[in-house]
Length: 285
Image (cartoon, rainbow, N blue to C red; front, side, top):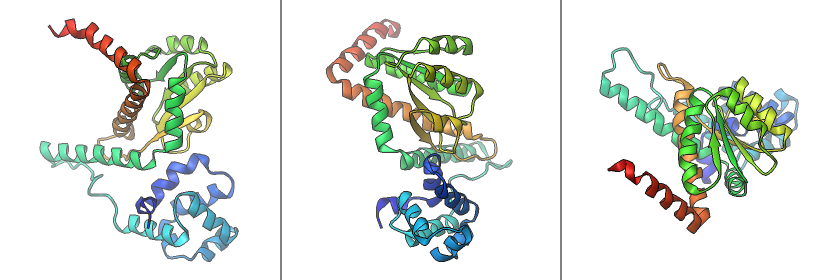
């Protein structure tokens, strides 16, 4: 069994969901909605229920990284029998401060691990190359996602690339309207359905701006419409929204982008970083 087949089945389906079409979407929905039934069914039974050929189901299993239906079913069974409740435990009213802290830390760790598992290497590499080749990189996000965009600006400006960010939504739209086909817009939205961010996307698309989206793996308008989607994974628990959990993965994604860009720029990147350090050194006195 290869490393892909040790990963959770439903997670892999969700991470690939935006790329599914036609019968693939039908099979994906069937598995996500009936995991227990799948574990107890043969490939023929699943194919009959869906009115598709056995080979279609088999190809779907390969599409999400398994050797075949049996390998997919084993992974799904493991996911059902051994849920990760020890990681995503609900916070209880009687939990003390240390217990709450432990559960939050474990959830953050699992969020990072899950996001790393679904990271699509070709898309991530393309994103880095696109940023490196851009005349200018503009970062967009609203609400909590704007905090992530500001952090990304704080990182990327150290690399020497031309980067900017706005907090006010009107200023974001004005800035977006001035981008060109030589620029890159990085749009951050956990839901992938923020009205403000979708408006930004419409504006930059009119100028053929290359777009990178950082969003949760669920199927969303943003993930379907950006040129390069990058996904994060998070689980919702009591007292902790999905957006809060995803923030950790989004920050890690930004850090990974920053380090890759800095490494790719080599000496020019080092020089830019040294200039930043020298400029702010006075603040440390």
